[in-house]
Length: 185
Image: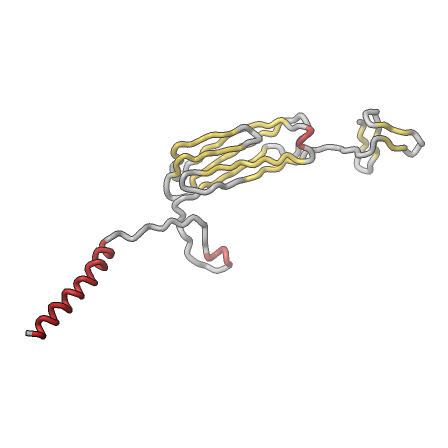
């Protein structure tokens, strides 16, 4: 009789220990989302490429390669869903150009472009740097900067003497001779 009692207690303890394990095993495993691009090819080795569920692409270009003060730069800012799931509340900001737009849903593979302009000022010398910053509910803030050089001639002296002993002051017309060309200012 004592043997049966010990067997019943041992079975009861075993069931008591296994029940929580069985309940935990019935719950679905959490899903993990990869937020980085990775390929064995990045390391110079062939390997698997992981699929990215949420990835926001940002492309910023300027039509002009060099500008002068007073000229207009024509920018295009494009955001693209490069992942495998839709992105929601994609906010695109560019403070210099005054852009602050929100895309409610950016479907997989789709993109949205914003053509914008900027007039170059003296304060932009020697280069116009412009940065856009989008993010979504599923992605972190990313940024892209587009830089356009401003062609200029800066004179740091208030006056100087030319080869004929004539003092030239700032604001006065003068000629600069170089092996490439002569500029009248």
